[in-house]
Image 1 (cartoon, rainbow, N blue to C red):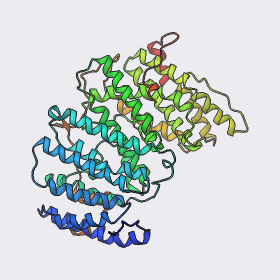
Image 2: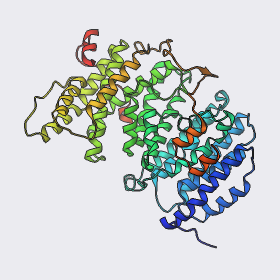
Image 3: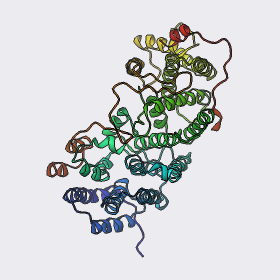
Amino acid sequence: MKQPQTLSPPFLETLEPMLNESIYHFLTEFHNGRTDFSELTSIFFRLIQSMTDPPLEFIWFYSAITFQTLNSTAVTDSQRLFLSVNDLFHSLVSFRHRSHNNNCFKSVSVVAPVLYSLVNFKFDVSRLKNEIVGLADAIVGHIIMCCSNNNSIGLVGEEVGAGWVGLVPIWIADQVRRNEGRVDGFKLFFPLSSEDMRRGIVGDCGMRYLAAVVMVEAFLFRLCLMFDSGVARVDFDKDVKSCAAQIIQGFKKNTPFLVMLFKLLLEPSLPVGELLAAPDELILRRLLYDVALDFGPFLSCDTSLDDAQYKEIVILWLFVANSALQFASENGDHVGVNCYLNAFSASQLPQQIILWVTGVTSVKPTVPDISSPKDIIGWLLVLEQQGFKICDHNISELQENALKYSSMAAKVNGVKDGHESQTMVEDAPVSINGRRKRNSTGFWEVQKQIKVIKCCHENLGDEGFCGKTEVVGNSVSDQEMVDMVR
């Protein structure tokens, strides 16, 4: 029996024209109404079986045409459709066991189509809640297992390139046909991603970045499933924060995940509009602020990050802390403000930031009051204007975005004293069947966006940080809250 071969870069290059031509052939025939691609499936099955470590592009193409063929007819039964998505997950992750290389980032990235399917297909959640939760847990468990190898997480899977983007049109081909081309390709395929995250994908982002996007989506999807559970509010808050903390602990070895997560908390809303109504999104945001602030003390003693990564994440955490205080203040949450201030002080990160600054300047600057993140951010802004920089982040740009997002978020009348409000976001998207209506662009604009092959375009036109820090000292007045965060 012929042994599977490891692909060398030159040999892989000889296969790329075949893959590109196959993508073009599939898209042409699919949009012409063809549903049987068994011959193409057979060819790529044999090709992948001959490889010890098949590239992501080949895994996705084979899996996509198989999945589209099986679901080419109008499938209206939720149980049958879910089973096909569940089979897709097990098929995709099985390639990890065949590889001799522990390419953790590819092993994480490979499940992106499963998350796309779970969000975009209209499952009967009332009938399939346990099954969907089980699959979400399996996805999270798979990712944590991939991240558990300390030796490979920072080394293996760093290859640069975004050839996989040419496979996105195949995964969304049924949606394109159903909507007559009026879809936003990247937003459709990554439904729980922000615009900023998708901008990073457009370039040659590399597998590590793609893996982080998938991790953020898996994280948000699992937490969204915890809503409408019928659990009492106190227990619900505790359960969501505990789940979020455990997932972060398992995912945090991929630094871009933490960067993306913290940046999401600086935006006016979380990208969960497909799954949660606006009041629930605000509740999730509040709970994630709780978790992020409680994460500070553990971040201060984390030795797994290199110096540049550590500084990047700490500065983002500083802005998240400020955003959390502003969120609590604007919603009249006195308890939340006190908890956040105490968590901020207990983290030791403010002192760490000051040490970074004083350690790189010959002239010792005046040390600010470190009782609130607003004071340190203002201090860093002044120092940046004087030419001092402690990390790759542009502090003034972060502050500008924070002010812009704060202005946008001010339209939201949200959580009051820990209880959800019934007031919706102003000018919210139209809701169709409980789902937000997407903005639409033409299919060929999607092709341009993801840089699909030219011929196709032309011819087809730790569990310990899950509770709030105890309130100590005097409570904070309304005016004091406002002063602290503005």
